[in-house]
Image (tube, rainbow, N blue to C red; front, side, top):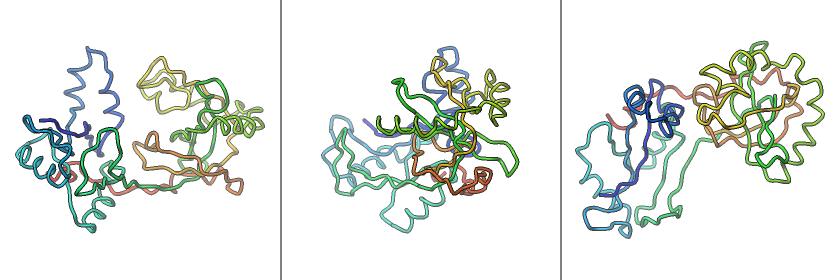
Length: 285
């Protein structure tokens, strides 16, 4: 059979994106060790073929029924994703399972066919906003303009400024504008910068990927050099969730500058953190 699904790694605090990333392109010598230390699971969503029969033109309701019949008796590490027609139950999953690391729920038309390379389903994702300190930036990979803004939140008022992620995906025009907007904040930025000691201490450690300017945990050759800024700028961003003290990768968006906000007030306590939920509960185990 041909099954559509997703590989996940579950940790003690829910789905572990970082651990999954380490499983994607490891050196051959690490494969067996990582398989034991961070075992992966497969979550089945859809059934595209069974035996010699292609099911893509069948409605989702029929494909789902066939999937349950084919894989209904599976055990870990293979799981069937939950499904429901009940809006209230879906709302409950949306709210509750965020605590296991899920960023939302998928909605599919019951009569919809499977169309490769086309989005016929809808992803309903959590979206929240936060005001963050912009303490640095990276140049775009093209070499022109600002590629990403390095975001920080204070652990508490008067505490440490923690690197929580980046805001990126700017147009070429906006990248050039940002370079002009940030230029005044580069002067004397390296004097007493809140990340300077942290970067020097962490740059060669195993946690370096959590630090602005540290080595990439996924690509040692990737240039993560950055330009410090005086920690005086505040930006409002939209984020999809928090994993291991950082914004979920790839979904943080720049909304607007907040000149009315005191950078010292941008602390972690503004973030909404859902109560933890065991991944086994998501799988129905």
